[in-house]
Image (cartoon, rainbow, N blue to C red; front, side, top):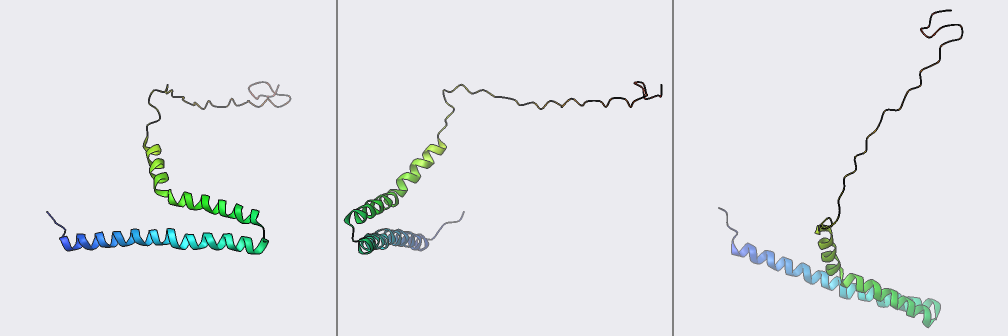
Length: 118
């Protein structure tokens, strides 16, 4: 039986925690700066408070979706694992391909059905 040394487990825990910190940094700081910059750029380009407000609301929606990403992915995974056939009338339909009837060629003029000349 193999065992993992405790030092390796501690290092992996440290790297995992650092990865979560980097993800939080990117989500909060970088996306926050992009959000504020885009609202400011919209206002500077148009000098319209309405357009800046629409940009702020749109950016807030995007930031909200990003913030709830883990909840949404968990809900999606639960929905995919759920058995949707319980309590439903499940019927099986078999599709059968029937051969297409082939039309026989008519006999040539001046011959009978066997193909002999009349």
